[in-house]
Length: 315
Ligand SMILES: NC(=O)c1ccc[n+]([C@@H]2O[C@H](COP(=O)([O-])OP(=O)(O)OC[C@H]3O[C@@H](n4cnc5c(N)ncnc54)[C@H](OP(=O)(O)O)[C@@H]3O)[C@@H](O)[C@H]2O)c1
Image 1 (spheres, protein in one colour):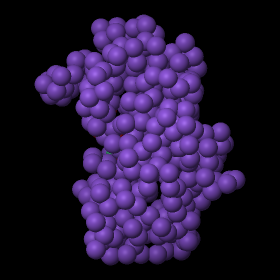
Image 2 (cartoon, helix red, strand yellow):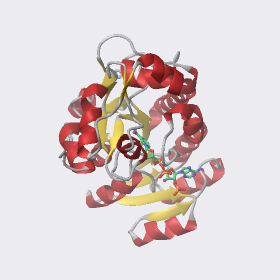
Image 3 (cartoon, helix red, strand yellow):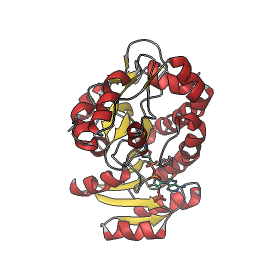
Image 4 (cartoon, helix red, strand yellow):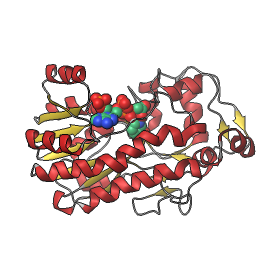
């Protein structure tokens, strides 16, 4: 199939492109940068230079590429994410989600594409109900202010994508990425914070994260190109985990000392209520619906083994 990827040079785009080619697809990509376009061409990818805020340029790139599937992997997160300034860190990604998604939908339509697949995130559900949520859980629209814009922009992306029913839309709500090129790589921003003991366990460490190895996320994206019903799916590993479990393991894999512990009140004063939410009340997100619908299984069903591979073996 002919596939057009926007965000092809980003954290998930990089492992996605070789997987698409290995699966026999003919791959095109959008980038803003001429040099990255040349590197893509050298790797056998048809590159189109466009800024996704320019609607006409996006539509022209889509028409020129004539893809059967458009894959939207646009984000613009900082190299290291300072949770205390979460709102500022998310600003450009929020803008991409809200403003560029309609351009890709318009481009996919103009090109006569059969499906659009768009990147979302799983960790936007409200801290209520069971410890692990499915895709129908209520989104955290009343989140603390630092987090609220990100939830709203993510929902805008989902709504714009899912409203394009003529494009058999699939929204992939990835869990927290780890692996090469992510915050949870040995040189990634979060790994560096854990090593420096600046990533503490807050309160009881009861916030539950659902992780996914970025290479599994790329594999799942290839699986989502055809078949299955359009809709919203979590793409996560099979072991949602409390911070009290995964954080000491991540530290051990990195050869770091055990994380410090701080009371929730201190966490709130130092980093804000949104940070305490991630640390103590976040719910996990089940990927069962995606696995069943698309017949897909992750190579790393648990972050326990995945962290050993991605961060280094524990001492
Ligand atoms: N679920 C998760 O946990 C999750 C999800 C996403 C990202 N992250 C993390 O965020 C960090 C940074 O990754 P990232 O992928 O956001 O950053 P990135 O490496 O900067 O990639 C952003 C991608 O979006 C494209 N892009 C951005 N603005 C664009 C525009 N105006 N026009 C056209 N293309 C545009 C870029 O293309 P060009 O630069 O080539 O134009 C690039 O391909 C990583 O640590 C990653 O793990 C985590």
